[in-house]
Image (cartoon, rainbow, N blue to C red; front, top):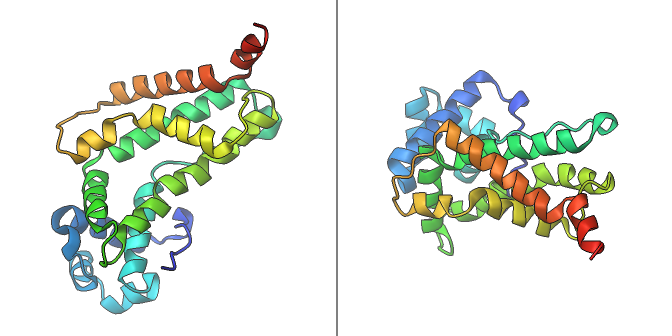
Length: 217
């Protein structure tokens, strides 16, 4: 399946954002039954506008998933002023955004529908979520990880491996528990604490000082 390019939030009009928010709300309520007609009705726009903006239903689903994923902000990089503090704060902010998004009702509902589509002959929402969720998160964070390695603040051989480790430290069992119906409530304070913890654990595993200490034994 041909997947759309990532949504550029700054390129979306306010009207298009409203439509994508309406589509997300419908996915929570209706799941599999979301149609171009139902989105047009909910968003008070024409189907012709939907087809013009997003193409077919898969294009709309892809844009909707990307719009949700865009709430995890990329990390601005300033190579001239980059150091331990900016690396640490960038990782913490990314982790915090990520936890806020995956613990929300919209992401939980979206992922439940996507799991139901995985490996089926239906519109492959599973592939859309995988490409524009975890894979997009990796593309967004890798430049920060690689700059940290270039500046000798992080030591790792494979960027993918380092990202997957950070993913595991941030998400832990939160997503699977929510998908299975656990009434886990993540407050802002809990998310802040968990983001700091995940960052500290990641730096303990991949930080240059840790690797230097290991080499001294």
